[in-house]
Image 1 (cartoon, one colour):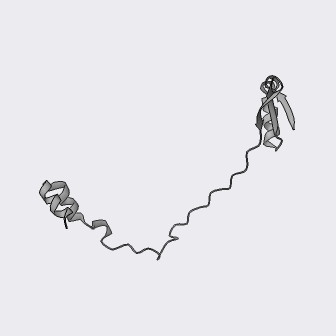
Image 2 (cartoon, helix red, strand yellow):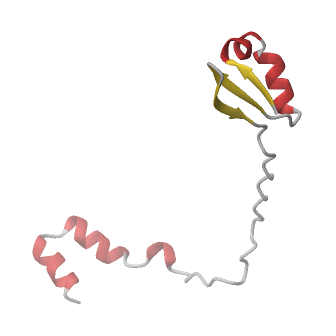
Image 3 (cartoon, helix red, strand yellow):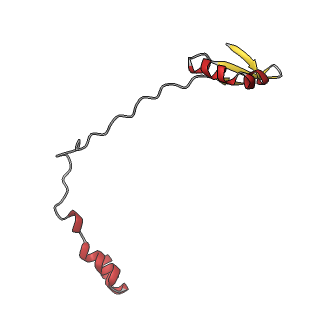
Length: 90
């Protein structure tokens, strides 16, 4: 594995990046001491596309789903605190 000093890495950064992108890892050293290892990124797997309707028939949604408890919610917003307490105790 190639080792380059910081000055050389700065001078030839484009060339070193191309080498790393092709799969050649290298080490950058400072005063002869290895500081970092540069390696190519792994290819990410493309995210799987979501299929619309894949749960069709698996979940039952009540017909009144949009309006469930609408009266109780309305009462909580527009009623007084005693009305809320009576709803809570139901």
